[in-house]
Length: 376
View 1 (cartoon, rainbow, N blue to C red):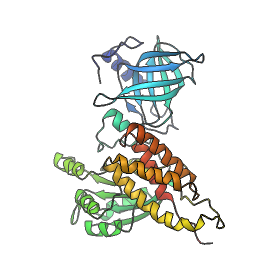
View 2: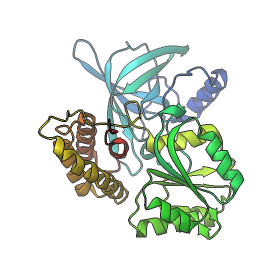
View 3: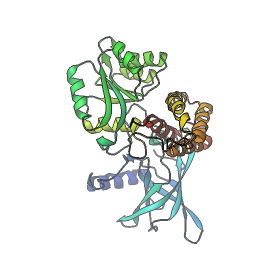
View 4: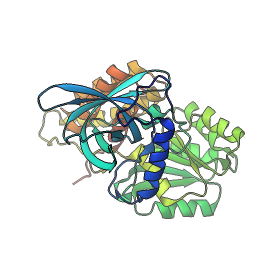
């Protein structure tokens, strides 16, 4: 990612020297050094980005720093001197297409590597989309969570497989989750079961009566907008073009591992909080309690509409749904839904749908967690 117009960074290294230094550092650093890391870190070796640091006195300084890697939650940069942890900062990132992203954060780590080179760890104030920042193909399995606790996965999932062995293997990988699982082995059966509701579908590319892409097209014709992940060992351009044309939410390459499967599922079923069902905080004697039934019906439809609006990059519809949820969810006993909706609307209004995809996705997942309270 060399930039001919880049400023010289503070460590005075060009792209070739920077790459050589980081290659050696990656070899010397064990993969398990950070066992509690939440987000996957992607190599992001840029010769120079602007880092603006605010000192305790209120003064600001902008430095041209080299970068090492990036995740949804932060970035690692290289600088020629020590920087105090806790310092507020803003990283200016160049997006594909020439746009710039100004990402606020704070310094959380400063390690001396060698000579005058220090590695600075920066935690972003809000998560970013690494897929957008790096211009990644959505089908390159770029799932962003480092590791996933199986019991934090809730929701309904339909697994569509062409063989019993594939089905049994996937169900074994998911046995420690809290997912409501159902299975199918044909497009026809999968379509029938999907109409009854599912938060996520995992399907084989090759099925008995069709293909995964054909299943997606059939689902969309029926108004089913849940995300669909396709698993396949076929990496031919013909197969990948079919997956892209169907606008699959993701892809999983066979052979599938448990960790990769959980990462993929978490990308669409993981939201803040404990991941379990959300129940209204209203008591039965609250005047608004009789409105809960209608809200529970409406929120299911709104989650589907929001999913479609995100896919269509329909900013107006996304904002409209977010504003509705902002105004109704909290009075009906779901304050966290209102918080998700406010965060999504704010990001959409300033950055657009694509940049707000993480916030919108969190709102969708949270809406799907809403359940009516079990009978006493």
